Length: 572
Image (cartoon, rainbow, N blue to C red):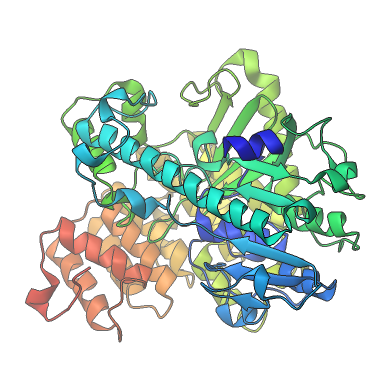
């Protein structure tokens, strides 16, 4: 990789728009932010709009032989990406193209995938010594943490060798001097607080472009080996490819070309987002400029370190949680296990690990307000679908797509965003406005009204009547949030009953949301045990890829209930 960077151009501010693989690839493939198409939630297989094309299709239309080896996982209805490549398999290769045909080839390596740290390699077999690892300040110094870091560095070395083999193969083919090479990761690192989190560690990616001398007019800097400070992100790849080959760039694309004849001026910001990760709901938006990172957390009442079955396969995060529970973590290390502030602002250039939140520092008020405004302008511009809960959006878009629904319906998105901003920073004096939202004809507004009252906790006593009425809301998302608020206000039986009703709704993501609530309120009642077991019993196929079942299994494990004792095979 060092050799590739010396021969090419290293982009120092390159970002995944979302800190997890499938939605990141969705953004690359479509040229629109996944939140604009409704595909921001991990493994959400929703349809794309007919207006939106995939970049391999456009490259093929321009005469290129396009191959993908081998991973797809595009976070979209898989029926829509059939045959978008000339080849997509473990054997797909540019060498298979018709003679003389130009090619575009993708090679995916999974050597450094998160799963690479799930099973520990014996310490004596590691090339990197755990004791030599420099830990980020937010990670506690546990043997497991050091081991996972060292093991991951080994995997990075292995990946480096694989990239070298691919480059050597290109050289031997005789096409190296005709071929532009892009290298990048599809999100940040994989240890806890990187992947899935809209921090620098989760979104910043290595990004190198090697351009042969014959295409010197495309150089983004004076000479190979130079670094490029321009801010780029994955949404920019599609228009950049079209700019390089001289094809018109469709107006609907949301990124900016950073190479080629249609290269734009350097942007001021790049943008990131987070939705549901596997079986856990969360929602964040982020804006990065050359110096600062701004984060808006729309579900601040959830801790950062929510339990995800896949994330917790790594020994490092389990040791981190154990250290926290044992009181062995300092303030910075403990923050991961606490609820979030509504806003975060970091001077990332001087605080690269992003541990010193400046959002409440008066010296940075102007930067906070500037980036807060930039986030809202962006969300409105791209028609951010995330302000409608996933289950609600599914029900609304039967027969259409989220992308088209947002643009063709009468939805007042700005009012939704304002409601979500109000809710996430709710104060007691906001209760009348929150109650007004809760009585709206628009279910998504009711959801944010209920969310604000939930965030207020005991201060929302005066809204109990309205929250109780919301237990009969036709939207299961509103019902679940109201139930959580009421449970925390002491109305536990009413809350349990409402959540049990949601568990029997046909929408699996409404059920997943309700299971999140049952877990987070730490309800270990026999009533809830029966409700969760009843939901499992009503499910036709017990599959860990169904996130409601994964969340249910997590609850049963927490309650020390063996599903096999109830006739359920859930041995994942």
